[in-house]
Length: 463
Image 1 (spheres, rainbow, N blue to C red):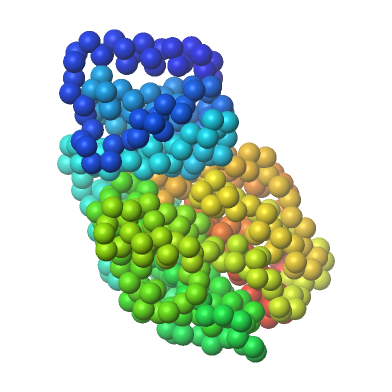
Image 2: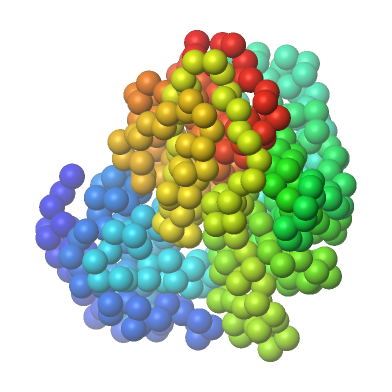
């Protein structure tokens, strides 16, 4: 790894060399990266060690500090918004580890959130990139469309063709890298993928403590419906009436994280309308990327005269379900998940840890289950490489991060991995499978659900 001083000087020199060209600003005037936020960076380099893209790629321009240099130069018209420049923004996972690490309090999250829409508006992508992004953003945020796409893929899995194709490695030879990566991350399609099995309202058990709404998510309700079902049972068992409006859609996280600003705003407005009509006192979410975006609605819609105030009120009601249950407390008895002590390792999702600053709450909940022992991995704060659709758009970097994450989790010797984010779960399962490791990955709500019901984990959990 190069020293930060040398890298920063070479980056500055590259930008200064291009400044003589008197290039016009490459960003438009619609919310460019704030110069005041840019100037807060003192270029100390603390962010480098915690930045996953820098650790894998090793270039200054693929670090937060390097990207801030580029943002500044683009604002001032010193460099063009060229493919070479854009690739450094595209390499960012948006994990926000640098925000946690920065001693100067640089709001890199706000800077990259302002940069990505600028790239989308002002940089003409290749035909292949455009088609891939259209496929992702016209499908993934819409569960009904995603289910249509999954119908032939379900046949592809059930027929055994997927196993044959993966064994031969044929897709890597025939398909573009990103499409092959999309197929590689495809998990087994569950039986509950094609319809929502949960009712619109589930009553509280015993004395009702409050009325809450649950966002089901777009990808999670299709690929991990059992997580939503377990979450509802846990909430109901602890005295909460749970509303799940039928017309709810995507929370906008996927679009927001990739700079699809207009789509993100429309999805956010729909979500606000839906849960306002449901008349709930809290909006709960069990996927960290979604939760972070829901809490950012006030910023996302700050310039909308109709929704700005409503968005701020909505965001104030949002809680991660683990954050919420830790705050209000469990009122149900929890049983051991197996007769002997169970060792588990909790995987910190980036938008939970760095975005929402939630770390101890999930651990406190899990530790309330009798005979469970939590172990901590090294590099716990390092991204797993999923990062929304990053493992599709940047498969090589994502694969290396996924392998590192799985190695660190497995090396704890735990019998169970606990993950509270759908993207992390799918990424970790994929890389466990690639390494031939049979280790279960479960959501904390699934564990609490089993402990409340008195149901034991399968006997081969320690195998």
